[in-house]
Amino acid sequence: QVQLVESGGGMVQAGASLRLSCTASGRTFGSYTMGWFRQAPGKEREFVGRINRIGASTYYADSVKGRFTISRDNAKNTLYLQMNMLKPEDTAVYYCAASQTLGVTTEVSSYKYWGQGTQVTVSS
Image (cartoon, rainbow, N blue to C red; front, side):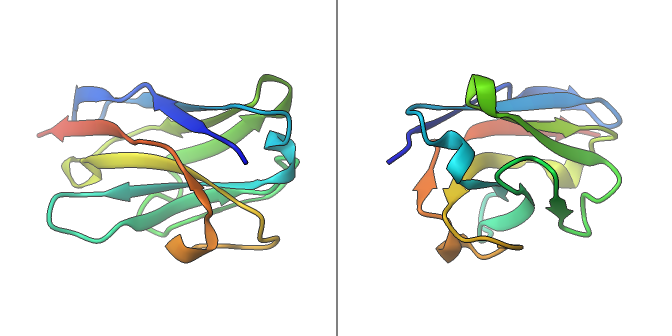
C-alpha cells in the first residue's frame, strides 16, 4: 500500500509555470507506474500523463504534450509535474495516482492509490 500527498498547487496567470509534487509513503514507490490526472468542475477526471517505474518512459495527453513534464525521484519517493505555458483550461484539481499496471495506463480504473488533490487555477 502507498499513501500519496500532492503539493505545489496555486493560482497563476496564463503563461506562467508551476511544479507539482507528490510524495509517497512506504518503501515500494519505485514499484509503481505513476500518473497525474486532473478534474475540472463539472467534468470527469482526465488523464494528464504517466511515468514508468524507473522514470525512463513518459506518456502525455495531447492537451498537455510539449508543455507538461513528468519526472520522479525514487530515492526521495517523489513524483513531479512541471507545468509550463499554463492556460485557463488547465484549471483543475490535480491528482497523482499509483498503478501496478505496466505499460501505458491512461484509465482512472488502472490506478489503485490516489492522493487528495491540489488545486491549480490559471487566470487569463
